[in-house]
Image: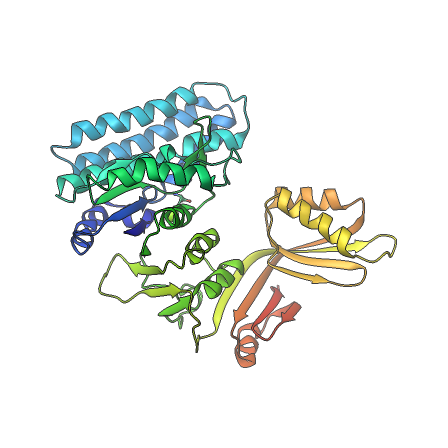
Length: 423
Ligand code: ASP
Ligand code: MG
C-alpha cells in the first residue's frame, strides 16, 4: 500500500488531469490511497467567498461562488462523457450545501464559516478526478474523507483525533480495498464529532496524506509536484539551486521549521513515527528521480538556503530591570501559541527577549498589546531573514553582501542573519 498526494497544480487544467492516467498506469496492481487538493487556485477563490459572506455581502459571495461553480462544471464537461451526469449531480449537491449557507446570516466565528465553505474545493476536485479516472479505466473508489478523518473543532487549524480516525480507517477504508485498488479522497479537510467540516491549515494536504500513510501502515508516501524534487534553495530566488536526491526526516523538518516551502511541516512526524519513506516526484516528468526522504543519516548535504521576507523584529525588555527568565518567556510562548505564531529566530538576554516572526499585522498588534504590561515592546518591520544550514562562512558573506545586518545567530550547523533593506 502506498499513499500518493497530488497538489492543486497537478489538477489545475484538463491537460494535467489527463496526464494523471499514464502515471497511474505505472502503478497498476498496486494498492493506492490517493489524496488530492483543490484545483489550481480554488482555495484562494473560496477564501474570498468566505470573506464576502462574513462581511455580509451576500451578492458578492454568491457571484464569486458562481464563478467557481462554472469553472468546475466546465472542467467536468470537458473531461467526462458517460460519467458526466452522475458527476454533475454530485457537484450540484456540494454547490447546494454552500449556497444554503451563503443565504444565512453569519452568527458564528469566521473560522467556522471559512471551513464550511473552503472545504468544498477538495470535494469538487476529487469528484471530478475520480469520475474521469474511472472513465479512463483507472478504476477507483471516491471517499468523503470527512467520514474518516475526525478532528477537534479548532477551525482552520484542526487537530486530528488519531484514535477515532484509526478506527474509521479500519471500518471504512480497509474494506474498500477489498473491492478496488485505488481509493481517492480529499486532502486538507476533516470533520468534527458534530459533522461540521474542518480544515487542517493551508497546504495541509501533504499532512492528510501522511496521516493516512501512518494509519494504513503504508510502505511509502509520494508527493507529486511540478518541480524536480526538493531543492537546496528556492530556484526563483537562487538560480543555482540544486536538487537534493536524498534527505532525512530531521533535515526536512528543520528546513520546514526555518521556512523552506518544501513540505507542510506537520507531514514528517506521522511518517517518522512509522519509518515510512517519503518521495517527492515530478508529475510533469515521472522519469526524473526526485527526492527520497527517509530516517537514515545523510552525508555531504549542500548548504540549504532559506530566504524569508516580510519579517518583524520584536524586542521585549523588562520594564523594571528584572531578569527575563523562565516565567516571562513561558508567558510569551503561551501568547505565541494562543495566536498560532512561531518565531523564526529568538535570542534571550538578561533583561530582554528578542524574536523574529512572519508579519501578520493583526497578530503583531495583539502580541505587542498583551505583552505591554510586563515589557517595553519595540517593533521593526520590513526585514528579511536568511537561514543557511550546513553553511560555509563564505556563502553567508556572499549572500549578505550589500545588506545591513541587524542580528546574527550561529550554531555549528546553522547560521541566521536578519537584514534591513537599505533605502
Ligand atoms: N487546497 C489547500 C490549499 O491550497 C490545501 C493544499 O493544497 O494542500 O491550501
Ligand atoms: Mg496546494
